[in-house]
Length: 182
Image 1 (cartoon, rainbow, N blue to C red):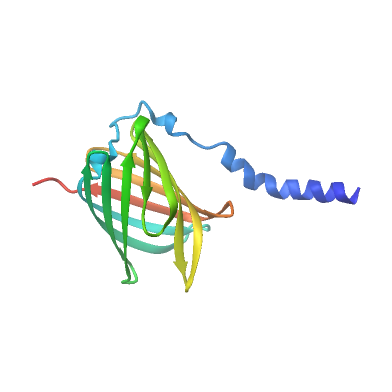
Image 2 (tube, rainbow, N blue to C red):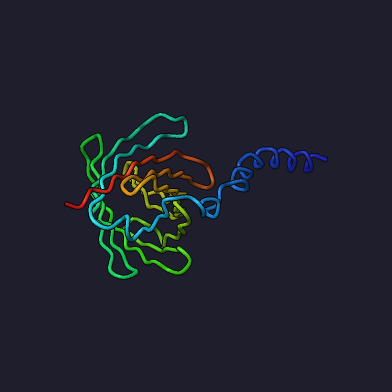
């Protein structure tokens, strides 16, 4: 009987953590949305971004801007991101992307563990990867669930959820603006 109570208690605690992963959105939900997102077209040239990280309480704990120099050759793209944070610190991430069939993409970067995978449909792109995140001298591997939505030919919105062991740590929100070609 004691064992059964422990099992029921463990199930009651675990269920709220597991259920949110079951009822999420799908990239297929956006298949008919316009404008149709073509990553190689949008992320080609210079793209500026403004963003913030909010902890799980919603408090903004970090703000940043990014200048991205992006270039594609065939189905391979390089997104060179230069971050400047509100505390004056800087960071650089260079993504190497490969476009596959059916709107699928893979990518690597120096602080990404393994390979990122994603798919574009309609105006949306869903991207998942594990990020090696340095915090106070320790590097944590956190799971990123990243959604991008193209609003028009110049603006894209991005929202990413950061998790560790399935526990939501916070969210990153970004607004991308593609620079007009002179």
